[in-house]
Image 1 (cartoon, rainbow, N blue to C red):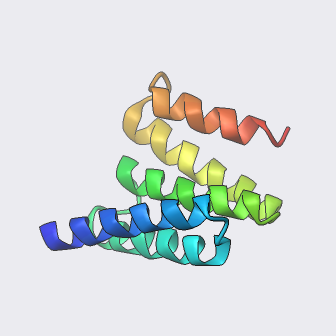
Image 2 (tube, rainbow, N blue to C red):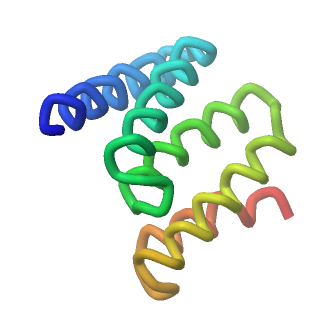
Length: 102
């Protein structure tokens, strides 16, 4: 399990670098692979999985896939509220991104 968590961490970091370089399709692939690993190892209803999903949503937004990004941010905030509580800072940060659409 530790090996998979390390792989996920590396993929998230590579995704972040690719995102910063505006290599969005590659960044999205890295983030989606990280989410897939986390869903298998941690489950969907996990704050770390939600954080990785946030990377996917950010890329979707940057690529102009706004409807998909809104849906993904909504999924992230639902997971965060259920696992972290409504008053957690990560929830507030997600709402901030989500509210940009409205």
